[in-house]
Image 1 (cartoon, rainbow, N blue to C red):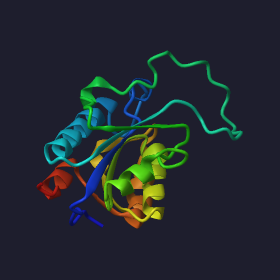
Image 2 (cartoon, one colour):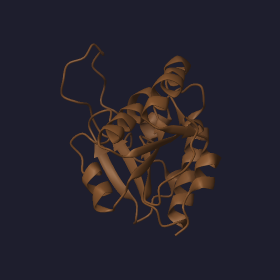
Image 3 (cartoon, rainbow, N blue to C red):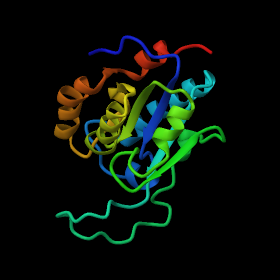
Length: 185
């Protein structure tokens, strides 16, 4: 469903816009475009004194999977990209799983600030963004997804999330649609 409204207490959650992930080959959009749109969203939220949550991943969940072992990443792999213009008021979430709610303080932080809706963007659409959107929906938050502010490692998985999953979790629109609906404070 196209985004129709945003609650007065809406927070922005930006997923995994960190040096190691932004450097990956993404589709259908280039990482630089996603970073620019995400920075635009963050600026708009900050101007309205709405919370901005910057999420980065620093490891993996403890369970087994079929992925080959990875070499140790570079020391700055998990550093948030400077284009986000991190501010002292931003809330930082460090995660070890795909979604930003598991074993973090995110849900507590949002509820303590009276947040009823979240806007979620970042990389990768079908991994961090979708997992966080599912967890937000399950926790009772209204969800909005600016689909031009996210990308994936494959165009097919991005498209599946955008067309089949996200309409069941919340409302979708563009970065500009979201900014136009932001409440004034």
